[in-house]
Length: 292
Image (spheres, one colour):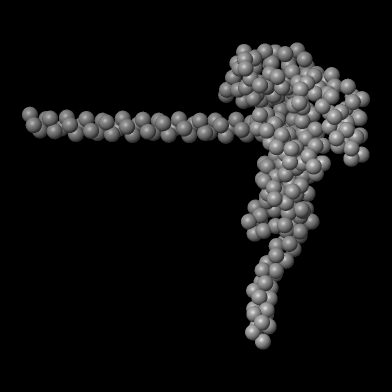
């Protein structure tokens, strides 16, 4: 009897261990599956943005349709489908996608963004041209006033945000304000690519935030000419350190013929290393001179 009880006890422990192990395995599998899905969705969104930047919205929307096959209520995909249909002039499809988004997420801020984007089509072209002309001539305050006359409130609508904040950032006195408001805008509108590119570019204008801007532009550069050109200029502005090699290596992998960037990095880094070698010698010379 005692032997049977011991055997039952051992079996119970083994079963408990097996169940716990199985639960942990299933949990790990579930986490891995979720992570895999997230990675796949992010890849599809990147692909969609790439084709949109290339003005191939039909291919961009195919990528978004694949997202919706995996997650039928993905609000970002629904928003972009509505936005790009609207921008392409297919107002009926845009209304259908907006209705689906409203049903999925009635309080989504993206609904207001779609309404703002729709108003963009009604922006007076004369005022738009005037704002751009004022900015080009260096009259930033007048340009900003003209921009704001086209807004519904203080926040620029989707489609104008990047240009508006870049105009503001071009004024040294308004640079900090522009960066602060642009950071906030990007955080609130993660699905919009152009404002993120604008923020990355503006950050590269200042030495203390240049590496942050480069890190922001780099993931978008392969799918955006604007981000790519901004990244290249930043790499030519940067006072490279040994830890910056990854930026230049990644650039050369995508642009193997761009010897200007490659030579710039090598020459600047060599000069920096030479400077470090000379400094101890100079200090030693000064100590000897003081001793004499």
